[in-house]
Length: 488
Image (cartoon, rainbow, N blue to C red):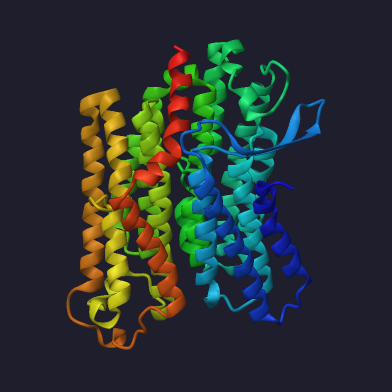
């Protein structure tokens, strides 16, 4: 068993052990859950430390043929695109479980679902075979449905159903596209490396239709406007630890898949470039304006995710190296920032039972540690220099400027809008007179301090020293970009 298989199956084994544990032993259940997620996190950090950033190919590769007739195989591997996503997924799952001490009903089922969700997410980023990728993509749906439906807020049933119907609908388009691509693979294999040569044999108009199918399939997850209808409700109703994973990782799965698909079908990506950039810019402005209008803190973070994922789509749409790097950095940055914001908003909601921003004022006197972390994260969300958000947006804007020039005015508009709602939120939460009902709120406890501190430290450290993050991905992205250039 290779190291990637150990990494992938550890959460599934953890879920199986939890299933055998009696449900009333909540301390053992929490301990086991945290033990497995911490083990997987440490293992992924070890992989990142031993990953060779100068090698653009697959590393730690594992291959086991499943169905030779169909050409499908259990193939796992890491490259510069999946490595940062893998570490992000394991980090945020650990933090989500640290933040799960508020879950007191049906604890056993909750922890099993969280571990199965991690299993599915890791499978998506590790799979090097489209058939296996698709299976893991669908696996993530089941635990998420139950996590929102069983442990969510008042409108949880509508939110979970909405989420599943949207995502299943998108998956159908993705499956049709995969089958269409499979027809043109020389040896009829579903390996990602074999699929790269599809564009040489496939007629251009078919490539465009196939990429549109991928755009719908991955666009629902990202979410791209107008496929984002499930997102605000799911984010607001999901328990906060689940929101951390939903915005931190699950949205990135869509962007990850779309980037792979664009490199696989470069001719179609060139043809649809203007559509992609329109959707990206529109999503950035639209998400930002809606976030600005929200009174509910969770809804505000949810709509800001639509805006930030627009930056990722813009990076992919540039089809140049700087833009690709901007997209991957923004995926990492947004995972850290949105994860931290949902964590902090969730902790605040547990103490006050309100998410309405107008109910708060001058929390800085009552909760100084909370105020520090929240302010830093909101400043990073608007792309302040010195935060990882700035590094990501800078690369995306450079890539966009190389491609379209003056069109990037709209990009700066969206940054201004995000600055407007971030500074308004800081002002309303932390300034003004102390409300009498808000005087007795407890500041962050030690486990919460560790969880929030870890994310905020990553945001600041990678903002000041982005080189390790950039080196992780640049060789692979250079390779991807050269494939697109050769297809001209």
